[in-house]
Amino acid sequence: MTVLKTIGNQYKIEVSLPNFSVIISPCCSIGPKLISLTPLIEIRSSFFYNPYFAKDFTRINRKMKPEFAVPPKIWESLPVDEKTKRDAVGLDYALLDLFIYEKNDYCPPYEIHRREENKKTTYYMIDFRNIYCINCDKIGNPGEEIENNLLNSKILQLTIETRKDLRDKLSNYYGRTPKEDEIEMD
Image 1 (tube, rainbow, N blue to C red):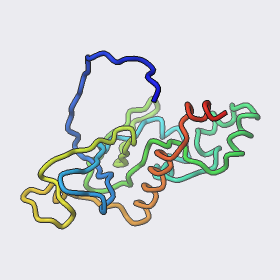
Image 2: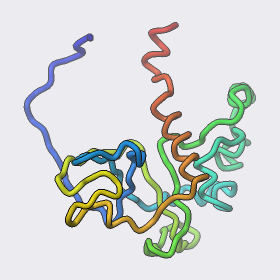
Image 3: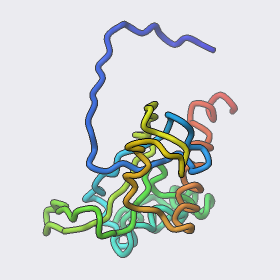
């Protein structure tokens, strides 16, 4: 390990309670007292500028052609060598750290503020950079009887296909080679 710089002793910790959280731990990994979660958050207004996304925001969850990963105006303005480089990669994720949840009746609709017009939506997303773990006596194995078990508060469950999309994207997110490693490998 290389020490890049020493760290001072001042830290700031901010704690907030989201309205909804998503269990990231696979069912078979939820153990006594420990679970990984991330907040369910509103989607970004910028997503509406990409017609490919706006047609179905869950497309962000799957690999796509490079020209669909950005709004058409941006794709058209890219230099030819940049388009060629992106085309050579082929199908890939556009927003690797984000996963969009389908519309549902349990999460409240909200308004996205845009210059042209505001849009009402019930799409929500998670950001893989916001994952955290909780160690708590109220967490047990699925099916285990614990008074006030947090797992009993589940209101939504992903379809098998959507769970596969989440696993694939999450694996790709954590499995990619970081830029600093690419530089050292050259």
